[in-house]
Image (cartoon, rainbow, N blue to C red):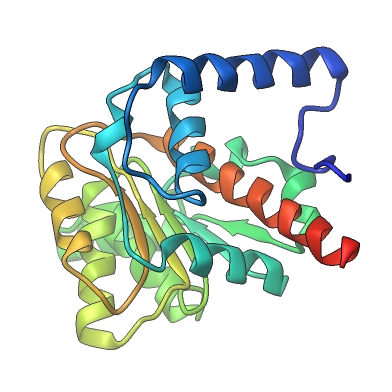
Amino acid sequence: MNTNTVTEQLTAAGRAIEHDSFAIIDAEVGAHAYGAGEWPVVRRMIHANADFDFNGLTAFHTDAVEAGLAAILGGGTQIVADVEMICVGLSASRLAHFGMRTHQFISDTDVIERARAEDTTRAVQAMRKAHRLGLLDGAIVGIGNAPTALIELVRLIRDEGVRPALVVGMPVGFVSAAESKDLMAELDEVPWIVIRGRKGGSTLVVAAIHALLGLAEARQLQALQG
């Protein structure tokens, strides 16, 4: 039986540590209500932060996992992030396997200038720039730092008909973080994965996307096996 190679650690020692970590999480997590596609995402998020609270805090739109896998397996899907940390954290080789590229605009000069001129945040203007460039429709959007980016994305979905393939909305913080994720979770037009409450962060967005990449490779291999 074939096993994942592209989305695994590159050395046997690294793979053993990761697999042992997953086994420990499975043994210690206790009861959960996540489906077969959802649990690998939550488990990798727990692995990223050693925090079992994500068992329960993580919420999925009904179509989230399948929508994410369809986008990845379709090839060439763009990933739009609120901050550079997500782009740097994602494995270049894993993304290349699926023909995916990352984008973030938080430090672009025009984004900063518009934020100052309109008295908004850079994160808001970065989402608007991604929209102007036509990058949001059909993309996987990962937001781990800026609640205002997620709030703006919700507005773009509601008011301007933007349709990402999947939103991984996990901004961390004390001002509008929980509220931004609640707004996202009210939507049915676009699939989403969110963390309820204040917890979140870019590392968790990366973990969730890496989990989806692993599930996508497993599905590829199943297809090859017939």
